[in-house]
Length: 75
Image (cartoon, rainbow, N blue to C red):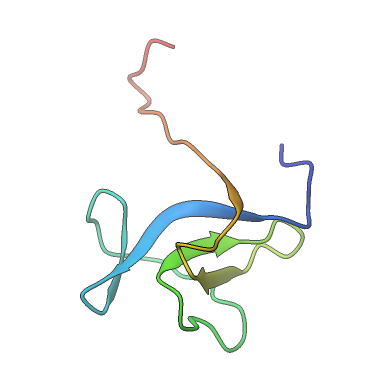
């Protein structure tokens, strides 16, 4: 559960060579961009209060993050 709704959450996506992809290099198969997005940034983040995606500047972005675990993980 994400408690602070005022902060962005990095989803693990980045703009690489003009194409949006996940951190592992997989291209997006789904998007949920906010109106006017993607903007000029190259890091994918969302705001928990609306669930919409935003392209933010990676160097200045302050965000929480989400981790994905494999379903075969023992932890």
